[in-house]
Amino acid sequence: MSTKQPMAERSATQIVADEFMIARAKIVELAATLDRIERASGNVDDSKNMQLLVQGIHILIDDQVEKAKRVQLLMSRDYDPEWQNIMSISKKGG
Amino acid sequence: MDYIDPHLHMVSRTTDDYETLARMGCVAISEPAFWAGFDRGSVESFRDYFRQLTDFEPKRAAQYGIAHYTWLCINAKEAENVSLSREVIAMIPEFLECKNVLGIGEIGLNKNTRNEATIFLEHVDLAVKHKQQILIHTPHLEDKYQGTRMILDMLMGDSRIDRSRVLVDHVEEHTIEHVLENGFWAGMTLYPVSKCTPQRAADMIERYGPERLMANSAGDWGPSKPTAIPDLIMELKKRGHSRELIQRVVYENPKTFFSQSKPFPH
Image (cartoon, rainbow over all chains, first blue to last red; front, side):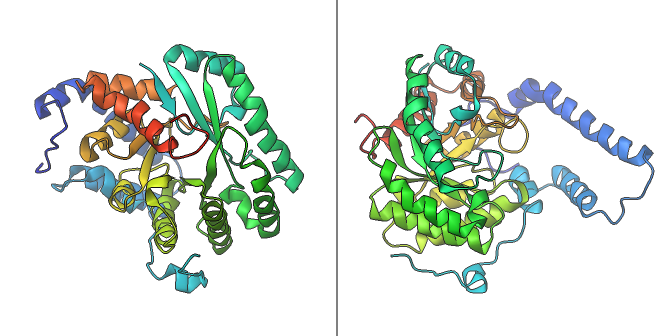
């Protein structure tokens, strides 16, 4: 991790110590959800939501920063800077 | 610690909640007009709702020593009904001189449609013409990023807008930077599932600092927690942050922002 924040009062070691049990519980919940899907009937290979979950999990374990922001963007509709022209919405107020 | 909740829908909470808020240190709230859980059928429904926000709720809050302020609009979900929206917008000025009205809000987008954008711009025009502050609702979940960018495009395309008098609410990790770097105030909404947790809000305070940043609980009729700000205070204390920093986010910043409206004590 390269982005250390100046306002953070805690060291990385301290954060792991403080939050291990919370993070552990969240990983177990996610694992159990995947188990539940695996045990159930039906196939989700073509499910867009399932694909998003898998891509999100890959973000958690890659070597890049800004994981929360990247997961959020992954799960977001695209923004088109030309939307006002497409919708015929005035660009200038007043 | 005294705090202000800048976005709390008390019409959907019990009087017991006012008492709990007072015990937790809440000294003032601001309540934006919002969706009632169903689409209202006439402008008269909104007139009654605005009477509730400007007359009844301040009295209920005052019983527990809490100052109650409000914002008026027709919300984005009901903006698909353009004719009703225009009737409501035309009626809002009747209430703008009420002593607890801080401005126009929470206006914004929901599904990022053309009708929503049209009514958003008409609300902005109303606010500018009446020199009102603006409180913005940004969409949730997969619509948030696109909708927030669209809202910022519309605000920044209007040269009449004073960005220091606009609060953009419900920011999260992928939208906060766009809001702050363009000079607007940003609000983080603490919510059990679909919005932001106290822990993630604390992360954003550490990441971006306290400048023009505040937190709220929403406290609406959905699964929400009106005492979420004390949870954020606890989280920041646990992380070793100073009383000054915490007080700035949960008290001083809302006070500074609201003080730009005539009804708020200067």
